[in-house]
Image (cartoon, rainbow, N blue to C red; front, top):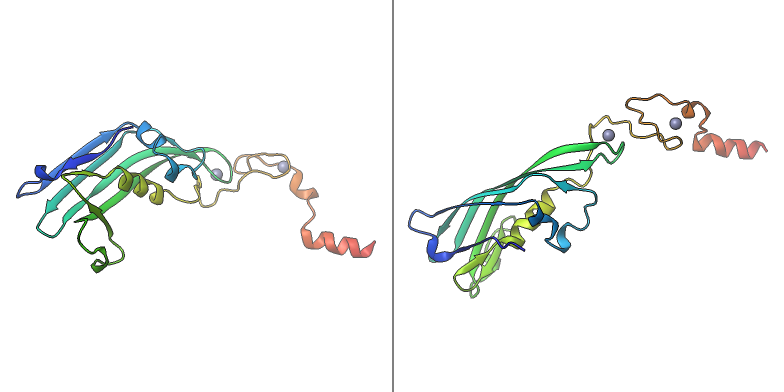
Length: 175
Ligand SMILES: [Zn+2]
Ligand SMILES: [Zn+2]
């Protein structure tokens, strides 16, 4: 498994421009964090572009992560091609420092030694940036639950026969 990391000593006075491009497989074997998303196919390289600065107190990483992926519409199951652009903002503090003094909306992580591995942070960012529900269109009509016809393109005759739940209750009373 690829690790995405940099060495603190590479961060000069003007910072470090960090670029990395990883094959899609980088995300398929990252373990637990993406297992909840089914049927997703990452079909581009994962591009990471970031500027990294350091002072006595902390290391700050600002950048972006881009990739494209394909996932079925959750209503009609047609494949939808999507892009993911995620902003990266990570503050790294030495192990000894207190992480609580930072604002809640910033990801703060601690490090020790000279090599900083941001693999877990990046995969986590992909994981939380993916939409919970993927739709080909907000107005997607989905599939007919009875015959499976794609109601965006087909007209099926099931609807005429369908009895609404409230009506079904009334019908039972009558009998
Ligand atoms: Zn759809
Ligand atoms: Zn139907």
